[in-house]
Length: 381
Ligand code: UD1
Ligand code: UDP
Image 1 (cartoon, helix red, strand yellow):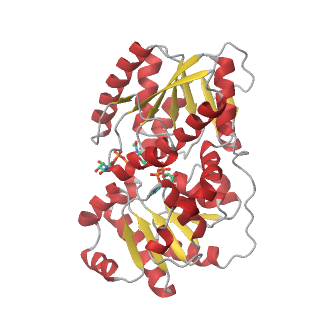
Image 2 (image 1 turned 180 degrees about the horizontal axis):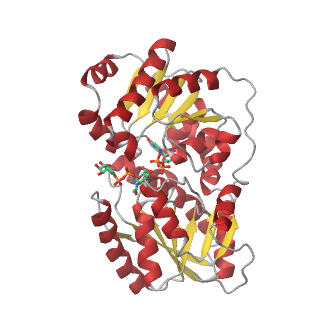
């Protein structure tokens, strides 16, 4: 029996961890014991607890209750808390997801005391180190022992950075093993796809017409913190919605909700509030999000996870960022990068909604990435 400590903290990590916990429970319960540590990076009910209730994730064994703060303070507090738990629990490895400050804190705490790091979602690169996430993921990859990349591109990025494809066992931080494993988020989307519509009423609740509304999310720090960018994004969404008489549903991240008050032009804010079509709501649950993704006309987002889920459910996507680490979406022609450029967003909407020949090939695995990862952990720790 091996013991792993899983670190979660931000919304997408709680969702990703659900896939691995499910695989452990269903197929590896005699092989892997999981201790879950919630850093408390996200703490609102609708950013954290809702996912435990809905996705059947075991309650965290520890909650560090770190909360919000500057990068340094938040990460440092997490490092200290995680280190203490690792020293007490003496796990065979720490499992880290994605690229948040919780990921970085886990990587630093574990690597310094020689606990092997397993990084799920390794190898992704935006090649933009102004993004806090890019710094977090590079640092985490380079102290990891087992690196699971969801995509071929991610695997190639690791090779380009000097990782070797054919290292032999035993693996450690100096002799890491890299994999192209498929995406645990795809596992989740497949698993919850059917029940999402049966168990939620979000479409009716917001009086949405199936296949005839825009699903938008905005939370990336450069979009929320820079007034010019935030105004360009909301102007574009407002114009598209008014010109096409099309509802926009925007489940708003608390970061953006707070910054709208300061950074959005007052007149635009009033117009949006008065609009029949522009619906700003609180963050929704994962099942509600899937129901929205399956039934919308198009997704417009700066989220990493949501751009991929749009693809899983065969919807076009406008990527409200200057670049993406999920480059295959753009290569397939189902997604267009617009950055926070009002004109480009409007053009991309027109292009994608008038396209009739979109292909959505299976780029993210077979829905069993989590089982593959569990098997490799079992055999290699
Ligand atoms: C974090 C991740 C980002 C990820 C996102 C997922 C980092 C550096 N960023 O960004 O990669 O895409 O999570 O959603 O780790 N807040 C609340 N309630 C909450 C959580 C946050 O009000 O439950 C507000 C606080 O004002 C906080 C702000 O949101 O200061 C930002 O939260 P934080 O966790 O620092 O970063 P995110 O923008 O959520
Ligand atoms: N999500 C959700 N409710 C919402 C918005 C997003 O459940 O209101 C889910 C979404 O389906 C995806 C994940 O959260 O699985 C993406 O997280 P987020 O956009 O916060 O972060 P990112 O993926 O950009 O790191």
